Each structure stands twice: as C-alpha cells, then as structure tokens.
Length: 577
Ligand code: SF4
Image 1 (cartoon, rainbow, N blue to C red):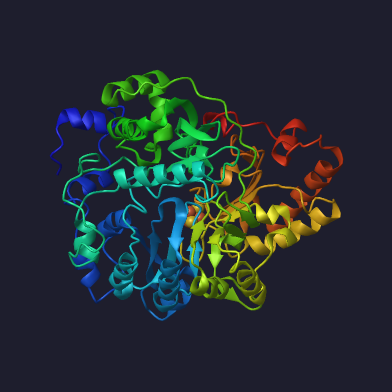
Image 2: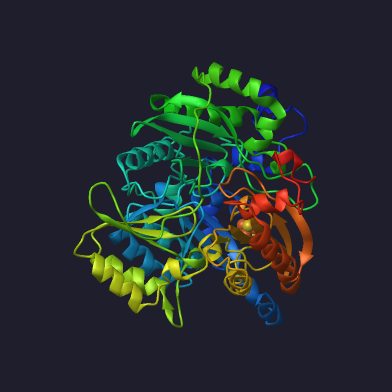
C-alpha cells in the first residue's frame, strides 16, 4: 500500500495517533499526482472522472463539479448529472496584463459560463468547463504565460499580496517577495505538463522532483499572504502563513511572521474551528525564503496526516505549541525570530475610484459585486473590462476582496476609461452603500458540490434589503463588513466579517456577529437556521441601536460585543463558546 516506514508514519500522522488517511495513501501512490487522470479525461462515456482522479486533479488547479440546478431535470431524463470543471488560474499578487485579460475573457465565452469569477485569493475562476474542453482551455491559459499549477490541492496556493504594487516602491517590493515565495514553492512535478500540455514545456518547464514537499506534499491546503499596514486587504491573519510588512522611513525592513490562520470548520464538530493567525515574531526581509520554508517544513513534518479535518497548520500550532514551533524552525532552517514589530491595521477594504501612484500614473479601483465579472441587463462589467483591455497599456490587478484595480493608466486614457465604465453602467463605488462595498460572497450554487445554500447569486438582493435599514438609520455610508457563504468551508472568509451568513440548508443561514473591522478578531454564532425574513428581523434592531448608541468611531463588530449581544471570540478554540 505505502512504502512509508514507521518513523515517517509517526511524523506524518502528526501526533503519531491513527493511521494515514486514504488521501495520504493516494498521494503517495499517485506518481507525483498523475494517477489515472489522462485516462479519465479520455473516457468518452461520461463527463466525469474517477473518484481518485477528482482528488488528484485539484493539485492541477481544477475541480470536478456539476450543475445542481439541472440535477432533477436530468434525473427525470435518466441522464447523468451535467458534470463540468472549475478551473482556477493562479495569479501571484493578482497582476494580469491587458493581453492576458483578453485571452481569459475569450476563454470564458468559448468554454465556460461566459463569466469570470474573481476569487478572494486574487485568482480567476472559470466555471462550467466541460471535460472535452478542459485540456484546450488549460493549454490556452498556459499560452498566455499564466497557469493553474497549485491553485488548489495540498500545496502552497496562490500567494496573495496587497492589491496594488504600483502604489509605492514598498508595494512593488512586497509584490516581488510574494512572487518569489510563489515561485519557490510551486510544485516541481512534471505531471501537469504531461497531462494538460501534452508534455510541452510551454512556460519554461519543471523537472521531476519535489525537493521541498516530497511525494505526499503537505497534509492539507496551505495559504499564504502578504499585507502592508495600514491596509489589511489580503485578510492576512486568515492564512496559514502571513507576512506583515514592517516599513521604516519609507523602506521595507522586514516582516512580522504570522502562522495558523484558517477559516473552515465543520458544523457540529467542535474539534474544528476557524482561527486567526498568531504573530510569531519579526525577521529581516533577507531571510524571507528561509523563514517561509521553515514554516512549511514544520507543517509537512508535524501536520496531522490521519485526520484531514484537523490537518491545517492552525491545528498543528495548537497541538504542538509555540515553543516547539520556534525550536523546530531553528532546527530546520536556523530561523530565530525577533520580537514582533508594532503595526496598525485600519481597514480590510479596497481603494475605489481614481488614485495616483508615486510615478504619476493613475489607478482605478472597480467594485465587482460578488467578484462576478459578467454582463446582465443594464450592467456590463465584463463588456466594459473587455473594451478597456483593448486600449489599456497598463495591467489589471485582482484584489483579495474580489475587486479589480485598472492600474498604470496614462493621463490620456483616464477619460476614455471613465467613459467606457459609464457606458456599461459599472457601479461607481461611492454611490453604493459602504456595507455593499465591504461585501464578499463565495461561488456556492449552482456549481459547488458542498454548498447548502446560495451565496453569490443571493447576497446582492439581500443587501438591497439591508440597505433600506441602513438608510432609515443614517448608516448608508458607514463601513460595516458583511460576507455570505454557502457552507462553513470559509472560501469567502465569513468568520472575519462583522456580519456573516453561512448556509445551512436552502434558504436558511446561520448568523454570526462580532468580528473586528480590521480582520484581527473572529465573529461568533448569534442565531441558527434563519430565513431571510428572520435575518432581517434580527439585523434591523441591531442596526437601529448601533445608529443611536454607538460610541465615537466604534465599529459595528465592537459595538455588538460592548452592548452584550455577543461574546468576543478571543481565540479559535473559544469560537464555539
Ligand atoms: Fe462552496 Fe462552501 Fe466554498 Fe462556498 S464556502 S465555495 S459553498 S465550499
């Protein structure tokens, strides 16, 4: 079954208890993630692939899904579900050229559902790609010098960075560091090229070895982000590993290392919980790759490989403790952290509208509701961005809040871009509620197999109703964070929102309150299984009370705790109390 010896077994199982999970065995025997994916893709009888290949193919940046809206109808017709694939395009730091945008936009029309989903990790997602079009789509993505390697799976996923590298020299340096970390930890297996690119090494190629990960990669997915205070636009503390830039006299000196963030938990399982990362210490910027590798080796060697629900680094840190973590990173890579340096976060949000960089070029932050770049009656974000990409000589930057910055715009192009956005009725962020500007929704239905309820398709209309209460109470331009997801897996980072709704069943949501406005405190469950009417009945009096009795500059998340509506969650392990 496995050629892991006893010693490895003990360390791989984390605490030495339990046997390796079947996924670990599958990874080990998959020949560096090949499995039988090539054969599955060639099988013309079905639109799906084998169960094992569904697990392995995630490492190559794609998930099998099915259109759940059509399940009943197809069952009646005695057809298999309408299977299709999500493709996640890795974009370290979220920077995409105008030429790449044109290709991705064309692929969305040709092979996906005519939309581009902007994820909360600065990546693109295509939804609804049929199996017969999967390889072609992958090949065309690679021809633009983007790829999908490690966009999913038990590896270091898309590395996030503060949204605009052109804002200042420090932003540029941090974005370069994010790219270095991304490149350093990209899996080296040649399987991706063999399976999807017919063995062609289009974008440089990789050699067959996994010097850092080994044959079984990491125990679980691994998320990494950089943030530059005072803006926490990557929600850095929700990541397994984070780097908070420490800037002195306008120069990047180093980073505070954070470890052990993560959003997911399983309903009814108190051994699982979301967690805000711990700030472990400071290091000078020259040590970045050594520090990052030490953290990844710690998780690789001590993460739980017997129980996937407890395999993320957050559980490894809680099980082994800080002292052991510091000893291990010193042992493996000689890393000795200094005391953390002071920093302040003031917001999680993006910059909207026009702003000017240090070099005189302009940047425009566009609000994209739910991260869905599509066209609908009277609103054409997709058409507008396509038209802009035809004249734009700068880049597009995806933000961690599912929005876009049209970056490096010349003085000459500025009025042209304004005119295009206006022509397609792309919302000017200042005209919408501050709550909507601070909203995030995961993809959920119809494609996500784990969704219990709607999110992306429903949140806009739900916010319409909350907006009425905001207007009645004079709160329309008060910054409050709100997030909705279809399950508790946490793709939209719901547990760091001041108001969060997490799907439990069709039309029913758990309501969570009390997160910190800057992403440094989790929320807590307030009420369970609420309908839309019940959610609004809960929120209206809270908002009215907030408008009337809040203290100066008090955020909504702090207010509900001060007024005793909910207890503060001070650590992931008391999230359920
Ligand atoms: Fe699917 Fe749940 Fe993730 Fe939403 S949070 S995309 S429903 S897994």
